[in-house]
Image (cartoon, rainbow, N blue to C red; front, side, top):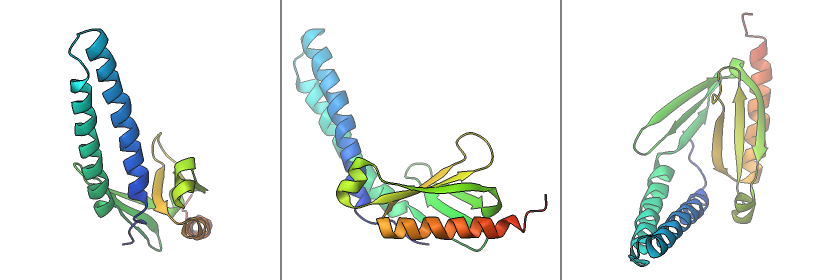
Length: 153
């Protein structure tokens, strides 16, 4: 099983910081203007969410693993709920690599594997270097094409 680039924790931490800021700021506004309790409850919410986000990012990074086998993509992830996914190559429709603004800033990319099936059946492998993401995308594409001959339909 392969792990993610450690810089992915920065991406997750920034997401937690944004969430904590928005929700903490909302509590400050509501607490100050509607309930006259001041800004301290908002600060408390911000700090609590930020601490949870930091712990969550570290635990999430430690748990995230993936493997590309001859027949499928295997993923293991999750902090509170451990999730193991197996995506057979015969189900793969197409594969993309993507880089959002924050990922570009820290030098990372993600690979998205789109599958045949129900809504939400797509999987994303985050926290890859751009070179690794491109190589993985091409490898998955090649394996999916090769598996088409194995399809019984």
